[in-house]
Image (cartoon, rainbow, N blue to C red; front, side):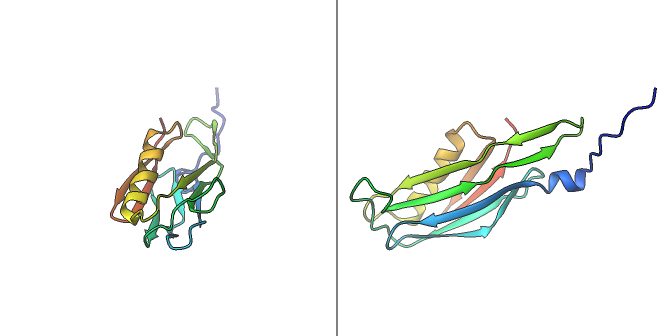
Length: 133
């Protein structure tokens, strides 16, 4: 019996991943993307946070940082397709909050969340890794 070719190409599939997008809704704390894709193959996405936060003073989006990990699909070696849901994380900031505290808060949310990601915070930077749970 001839086995059907699944079309799995590890180079292609391991390069797939979530696009990283960020937004700052704070007047003084800013966030930028340093590495814009978290791949199945282990390449981390990276963000950097700078400045002391003005902070949230009402129930609006003002005084928050946003992080979005986009939806994506990839093929596993057995030929099945895995769908990874997107994740939108909004982080409300406290007045005077340092970049290091914001980075740690993002890492804590990611590490404690249900999605297949893990993160590490070092100073004002966060590295995000794909990790199948």
